[in-house]
Length: 108
Image (cartoon, rainbow, N blue to C red; front, side, top):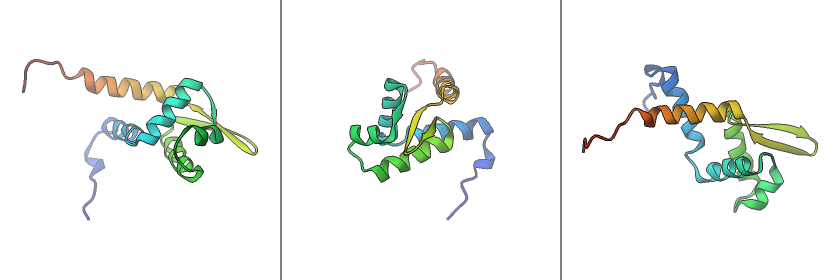
């Protein structure tokens, strides 16, 4: 299998791709929507809201935490997750910047 060649792209392009991965699965989009609406959420509440098992929700939370778009505070036996506002804003600006580059001019 070939290399991904991510080193061939800018750090900004790689970060945008990493942030986009957070939105690349409907379960992660649903989790982000719930957290954005509620401002905080306990993992058990997410499982109650989504048609997914605890293990599956945990896997998606792990990916979202890995890129930093959410963070959690541990209050045994629960972990309370919320949006990381700085990374949320980073994603909003990054995606907006990409979309703002295109100005409809009847290209196609």
